[in-house]
Amino acid sequence: MRVIVWLLALFATAVAVALMMGNNQSNVTLFWHPYRVDLSLNLVLIALVVGFVVLHLALRALSALFAMPQQALRWRLQQRERAMHAALLDGLSHQLAGRFLRARKAAEAALEQEKALAASGHHIAHAEKLRALSHLVTAESAHALQDRSTRDEHLQLALASSDQRDAQETREGVQMRAARWALQDRDPQQALTWLDGMSSGAGRRTLALRARLKAARLAGHTDSALETARLLAKHRAFSDAAAQSLLRSLALETISDAYDVAQLQSAWARLDRNEHQMPEVAIHAAQRMVQLQGPVHQARQWLLPVWEHWMAQPDSWTESQTIKLIHALEDGFAASDQAIDLPWLQRIEQAQQRFPRDANLQYLAGMACMQQQLWGKAQQLHTQSVQHLQDRELKRRSLRALAVLAEQRGDEAAAQDAYRQAAMV
Image 1 (cartoon, rainbow, N blue to C red):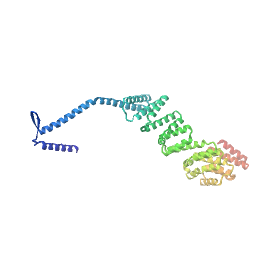
Image 2 (tube, rainbow, N blue to C red):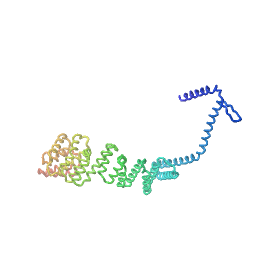
Image 3 (cartoon, rainbow, N blue to C red):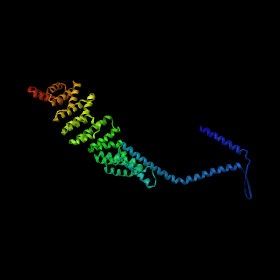
Image 4 (tube, rainbow, N blue to C red):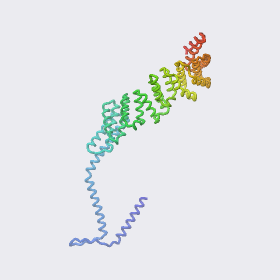
C-alpha cells in the first residue's frame, strides 16, 4: 500500500512539473556590462536545484572529513566498553561453571577496563553497578578459593561502589552475599549484622529471611528463628509439610530451653495458637511442666486441645503420637499428689467406652483408676490391655501395675509372676 501511494505521489509531481514547465516561455536576463545573457527560466530553476544539491553534498563531505578523528576516538572507546562488558560476562560465566580462578581474572580485567575508561573521561551508563558487580564476582571467586583477605577487600570496594541511590538494589545483593559467606564461615553473629544492616523491605524478602533463619538457629536464638520461620511459612517459602516440621522443631527447642516453671510458661505464651495445637509440642510442654514440678492442672490444660483433636480424628494420629500423649497424661498422674480432677476422669472414661477395644485407652483408664484407688476396675482394665498392647514400655508398666494390684490384695504369687513377665518384656 505504501509503495502505491509513493508511485501516485511521484506521478502527480511529474504531471505538475510538466504542466508548469512544459509551456513556460519565461526568460531570465542577466546584465553584466557590457554583456547581456538570456537564460530560460526552466534552466535557471534546474541549475539552482542542482547547485543546492551539490553544495549540500560538499558540506556533508567536509563535515564527515573533519569528524573522522572524533569518530575514531568514539569507536576506540566503544571497543573498550564492549571489552569491559565481555570480561564481566566471562567472569559471571566462569563463576557459574565453577572456574573461580578464571572468573577472578576476568572480573579484574573488567575493573581495569573500567578504570581506563574513567581516566579517559568517558562516561559509562550505570558505571557504579558495573564496578560493584565486578568487585562482587572477584570477591565471590576469592571466597571460593579461601582467599578471605582478597574477598574482604573487594567486598568493601563493592559496597563503596554501590553507595549511590541508583545502585541500592546492587548494594542489597552485596549484603546478602556477605551474609551468606559469614554463614559458610560459621559466623552467625556477623551474618546477622549484615542482615540487620539491610533496609526493612529487603530484610523481609524470602532470601534474606532464609539466611536469617539459618543464622538464628546457628547462633542459638530460638525465639528469633521461630519468628522468622513463621514469616517464611506465611510467604509460602516451604511446602506445608516442611513448614509444619520446621515450626514444630523450633517450638520444641523453645520449650526445651526453659529451665524453670516461669520460663516454661513464658515460652508457651510466645507460641501461637497453631503451635499450641501441635500434638508433639503440647505433649512435650506438659511433660516439661511435670519434670519442673510445676502445676499439673496447667499441663493437663495444655493437653486438652490435643486430647479433643485425638477424640475427633483418631485415624489422623500415629501410634507414636498416641503413646506420647498417654505417657504425658500418666506422668501427670504420678506427679500429682492430689486425685485426678473429675472432668479428666470423665473424659478418659468416655473415651474408653467409645473405643472399648483400644488397648492404649484401656491402659490409660486403668492407671487413672489406680490413682483413684479403684482397685477392682483397674485390675480388670490392665488385665484386658496387657494382652493387646503393642508398645513394650506400656506393656511393661501395665504388668508392673498388675503386680502392685496383686500385692495390694495379698497375692504374692501373682505379683511375682507379673514382675517376672515385666522383666521379660
